[in-house]
Length: 66
Length: 200
Image (cartoon, rainbow over all chains, first blue to last red):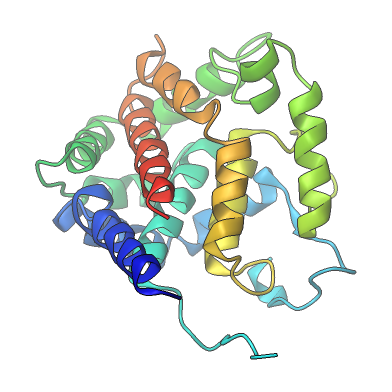
């Protein structure tokens, strides 16, 4: 990665963490929101949104996730 | 050939992205249960646009009961003959369900090695499915995390052309109360993601 690219990556990161998705305490709250008990909600989502890996391409994933 | 470094954990901003995608997918897939509602109530936003949308979401959750959000979700997404919004890429891009955008998405999914779970009635271009695919690509639910270039291509092809309009429609849907700020969060996430990918 050259210096230009590195600078761009940092810009993007700063943007996402700052004015983008940081949202102050909300950012942290959003993290907490779906990091913990929301696992159940995410499992539900997986059921209803419905996708799975195809066996032949990316066979390696934690089965427990689905 | 230099081996790719695989041990790098998902960066903080990417975890944030993944969690916003996951949160939206969860709220759109089914109405939040009482536990989810109480967690939504604890959200606190700053005065940024996303912060304000999260604050409104928190307030809407505080005003809502589980029964009300079930009713609201049904009116929005199921309806008697159809819901108030139709959250499918094909519908937004062509005016009809199951048209070419779905076929193109299926081709890309096959290439990426992602397939729909068996027994799921919604087609793959449903917003929840696309949000969950973005989340999975970021977090590495499909094996390794997908690189940003791949995420960008997928986002720009399958979400950017329509998802912002869908979330804006959700924001102004007549039946929406809790789902107004959900629409705002989604619209802002699409905007922020679009801008962030432009920086690459």
